Image (cartoon, rainbow, N blue to C red; front, side, top):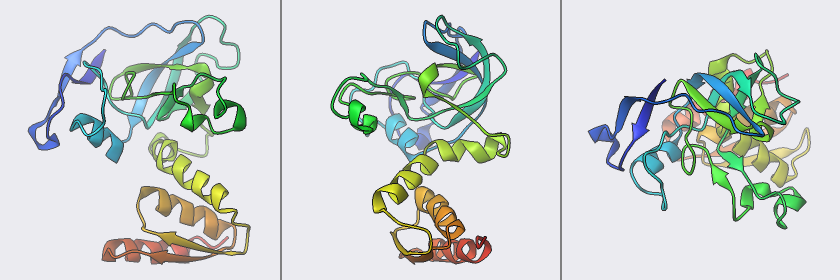
Amino acid sequence: MRAMVLNHTGDISHSPLHLQDRSVPVPQAGQVLVKIHVCGVCRTDLHVVEGELPNTSFPLIPGHQAVGTVTQAGGGVTDIHEGDRVGIAWLQGTCGQCEFCTSGRENLCLEATFTGYQVDGGYAEYAVVPARFAYPIPSIFSDDQAAPLLCAGIIGYRALRLSGIKPGQRLGLYGFGASAHIAIQIARHWGCQVYVISLKSEHQKLAKQLAEIIHD
């Protein structure tokens, strides 16, 4: 398969990623093999590529907003089947036993592994992922639409839940990046009155546009 491989970190302007031929990974027990359709580019990918995150193992295939089709399932996988469309997100593995995993906060697991950082990600034609971290993608979303939901969407929705916001209430968004521009659409769908605080004129413009068009 073809893959964009990072052999060492470097400034993104110097193109540290290189196209290489790699063997198609084989799914182990509990994993599925996914043929990648699309993979988004996240700021965290750039942090990994440029060496701003510690303990990166090389060679590495980055990318953690991937959408594709399952082509093979490893042993013991019964709830995901060949032909299913799934998403691969940042979090790819946890211990399942610590205080965080057992209290619905597995993203804080100290033994967590992350896609495109500790394990190969979606900048390739194929990727493997544990079946329990392969997310079914509803048909209402195209591949391109679904990919950002696997990072910015997860972050934005989690922030909404932590805020305790209820339909019809007021919500303040400080800054208006990738996660906020998705969160505002959900909040407006809930009938919330949303206030956005951002110094960037392009973010202010986008916030106004989304607040006006998302109203039902």
